[in-house]
Length: 271
Length: 271
Image (cartoon, rainbow over all chains, first blue to last red; front, side, top):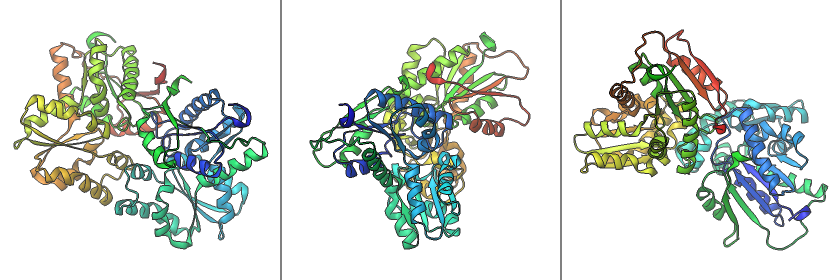
């Protein structure tokens, strides 16, 4: 498959980026997709910029070898720490989740006070804040690293009083700042959407970068005339750097029943 | 430095193994030590046996190149998933934390009912249970994977009501089994010792494999006549696969004030 029929490559530090895959697959139902999750080295959220860039480069090389026509960085941390450099290094169109999330947050805020919850490395990078202020210099941005939310989601405690306590503690200082918009700046957080919505009520609008990224991708493919013209069953391939078992059952839960897909392990450090 | 003066190599998936370093440095004050933390790929506790073995092999090759005289696997997961194979593959004496922990638990239990808290991969390996039953077939062993405890410790919430709630939930099913001994089967857990002790009271004895491993190492070096005869200031070297910043300030907190040490980053995937 080449040209317009070539697949879109989506990558993440692990399985969290499947929330982005889900939005892309829903909003661009005709596209072939290759997903790579770096499950052998997950998470990225507490690792250094150098390490996240090195890992992201290897994954981009792997996706290039698979002949993708465009790349989506589904991981907020990798988008924040590696997208800039990767854009300069490769000729393929490449998109991260941070910018689409920032653009939407800047649009929806009424009082100009935006909260960000994300990993430590994403918060440290300051990229959401930089982008938001370049869009509208008058915005105030308040960021909070929430390192426990990913493990809580991965433990399956998404509707749990302990998770709610943790959420309350993390959000307390953002709420004191009177935010009216909250960016869910890590792929796992949309799985806590219901809890966040219940706790925050209507006063705070939640922004899901995964959804916004799928829409940005759609616009980008249209502008570049890269949409897939075929209307048959698209091909979905899932790769991971660790054993594929963990990812397979989540993919089954995301895809409609009996939707075919293939999955495999990749020795990513060789790329 | 060669022969008896050669350093001991200690490795872990990250910084948790510094609890083992601390015990070794306290109990074998004359030994030179090299510590390696795989901070670029941490954690190991949710990764597959194949991946943990591959990573451990690279680290062992690195330590061999540094001329160590013996190796301690400070990580419970790596001890459970990789020690067996590494023992066959290398000629250096090598020791994990699982066996010393199991031996002590088998000795201290009165009612023969032992609990284990550990990572998912350690629990899945079944190694603690196998070792305990080979020591005393009549023992009953109850294991519980506690994936949230490492992130809670790393968040610094070691004396926090939320952490206590999590601990209570994890321990509930072990306490129902009437255990009288609990193995803290992950390097981070001794940092929750006070909380565990307060909650469990005197009815349950806590076993710290880090401490037991230091004593085992001491005996092993004596038996092999490998103790360092020098009485000067030992040399401590710390390496990590990610940026060294994170590890440096913890090392400073563990070592006595003004104790000299060196630290650096290693591209571990090249070994």
